[in-house]
Structures are given as structure tokens and as C-alpha cells.
Image 1 (cartoon, rainbow, N blue to C red):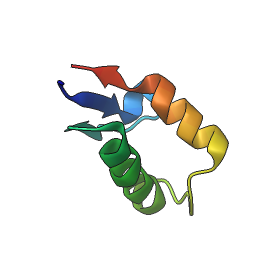
Image 2: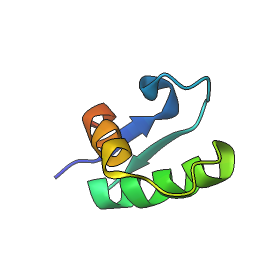
Image 3: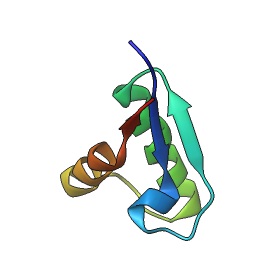
Image 4: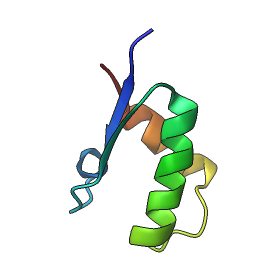
Amino acid sequence: MGTVALACRSLGEACEWALVADSETEILTRAAEHYKCAHHVPELTTEWRARLTTAMRRT
């Protein structure tokens, strides 16, 4: 099946956070935690989820 990768930098953020996970669901869950703590985004809106999904790369 492969893995999925996401980097904050790929969304235009000046941030070194990156993650490789087994599923898009795991990426979205962990990205929500990261954005809440590091970027003060209280929750991921539908728009943010779409941006994250677009920025994900299959590895």
C-alpha cells in the first residue's frame, strides 16, 4: 500500500515539521495536533483539510 508524507513547508509554512504515516487519516490527525500547537489553528476547517490532502505525497 505504501505510505503518505506531508511537510509543513509544502503548505508555504516556514516550519520544518514533516510526517510519514501509513494513511491519510493518520496524517490529518497528526497534522491537526501540530497546527493546533505550533501554528495556533484551533481546528482544521474543510478548507485546511483540502489543502493538507492536496499537499500529501504517496511514498
